[in-house]
Length: 604
Image (spheres, rainbow, N blue to C red):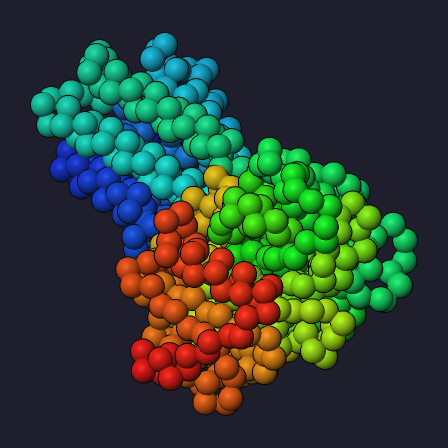
């Protein structure tokens, strides 16, 4: 190795000094670029998902440039130049490769943040007390952001990425401040006798403190929005090999969580069948008034609305097991002396995939819950049952109604009530992109159909850039705090794109959706209630579906309630509740139904 001569040493230090002595306006422009790109990331939930990789990559690069430009003014110039070069290299990788593969960006961003955080903490070995403190705090903040990114892939894209944007803004602001100080005459730290000004020292330390505060806030948010602690216990597993007989009561035990004082309840485990007819398990809750006669009671078989797709989203596992699925009029049900049989559906609580908008699996879960409840020794049922369902449960109740005659002919189904039902699955999926947060529900549909139908694949139908978000959204229950992240994810997707890379109404997925639209004959009296201001289940779509059913010979009673939205129709004070209770009492009393297909067609 050649000895280092004064000339060689001077040449070796020439580039760092040239970079360190860059004109103030160059440093100002780089700082402004950091602020701009950081702000774009902060506003990420309101812009295109596909641009996130570009924003992050450019933020890496300008942050690296800022490090290189200010290296000569730091106590550890070599370390600062190393970090700057690493940021630029990482930014180029994101732009060239990861910008096209958002699915792996969370892990990459996490690794970069942790690595740079560890290296940055090495700065505590040199410099003044404020410089060492700033290096330590910036390093710890980056490590915290990186760890959070590993634990929350879609939070990385929506929360941690936002916080990274805020970090970039803080960094850019500090760089701008450095440019201003240079403009006013502050000399680089490597100049003889130069000492960083008090303002510069405190500005950098203040920025580091701000980054730590953001990291602590992100950590607190992580604890707040973690998935619920509910998990299936041994109750939800089969006591032995399934016999294959649907509706067999396997297990029953008292249930108290979320049950009113005026009622007594049990949770049950029973056998049912999947959409393909394979034996499986389902759980549910049976509830009745704690007072009254011992005479056999009529029952409401309740098919709940969407609570989530994942196993732990079963109503019997949630804090509010009855309210989570939007059951209306529980107090009136008890006062009337009726019992409630509320299935969780197969795959909620029990093992396997939930048949979300997969009609056969939903409908059989409802009918088999009635069979299982009739075997309980703890309660006497008359056998007369009216099926109620809302939203997803409306879809399930329509399927239960059309399957009843062939699948469970022994049951006395007095009537079927579908409230804002997700009746037209093709129309619903087409409509979801126009619904605020519609991608949350679309993710449930996608994951359910991927699980139930081998010919419907992620590769064919799902956008690569949305796969992480869809997977994570499908793991959160609608009643859990973490659904906030799903809503933010949905907002980011819904602005410019769908989660689907190809038309979901075509090909294998389109065929499966059409097959799960309930078009079979329902022999029991049918009541359909719909809110006239429903943003999720479009009233016009509902009218078109019902007109088609009427034209095919289905008798039904349709009522539309002006001004009520999707949840308002089953909320307290809704006029539907009185109509539904009266209609149900008539069914139990054997009164003739009063179909109004002509009115339904006129409303269309």
